[in-house]
Structure formats: C-alpha cells, structure tokens
Length: 165
Image (cartoon, rainbow, N blue to C red):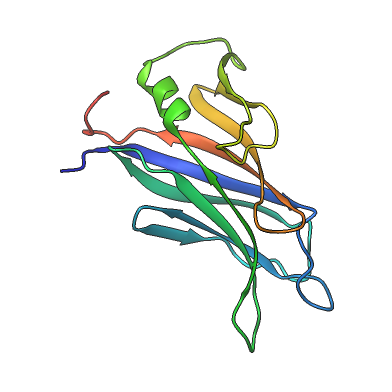
C-alpha cells in the first residue's frame, strides 16, 4: 500500500520563449501529472512568454513517481496543440526533506541537482532553505518542440499526522 508522505506545491512561475502554434501566437497552459493525479494552470491568451505564478499541489506517496509537465496551446474549434513536455524526478528534493533540517540560515543551499541526459533541467537547480521551508527552483527545457522553457518552484508541505520520514 502507498503511504502518503506529504504535499508538494509546484508553483508554475512562467514560460519562456514557448513555441508559436497559431497564426496570432499561442494560448498556453500547463498540465502536471504524477501517477493518477492531473492538475492544470489557467490559459494565458496570446502569449509565448506567459507569467502564471500559479500553485498546483500534488500528494506525494512512496514509491516516488516522476512528475510529467506538458504544455498545450488552447484551441477553440480543434484539439489543443502540444507545445512540448518535460519530466523531472523529485528524489533529490524528497531526500533533502527527509534530512529533517531546521533553523538553517535563510538561503542555505542543501544540494544542487545538475542537468543530465536523463532529466530536462536546463541549468543547475538548487534545493535550498528559504523562510523555514525547503524549496527547489527549476528551469525545465521542453522536449519534442522547437523551443521553450518552463520555470517552476517546488515547496514541501508537511501533513499533520503523516508518517515522519
């Protein structure tokens, strides 16, 4: 049986240089999937550099599953066009949470996830202590598309009564 570890708040910050899918541009939105969970951001009209700053919250349980992020162009009269996808693991992030750290100086980097072939991370992604929480800032390079990146931030939310690591 899966055991619930806590909640992962994924803040979708912005898209950068996303692909153009319509004559006038694109109307992008982001879909996050993890296991059977599926969450969506709002649609940003006619914008290839959209600012979302929206929080999507996923329940995290063992065993850890990768998170799949897909960007689509909202179309009214036809199927929404794909604008790329990315996948990322949260293993390093969860390992940092499991360290049970407290009272670190604000901005302390706990570890850094480096880009590699297996992930879609565009640059070094620091996991850090900020305002009493563990967060990770990630820039994902979208796959299966000519251009585009998504900036996001992960933050851990403990659930009272959930098993402590």
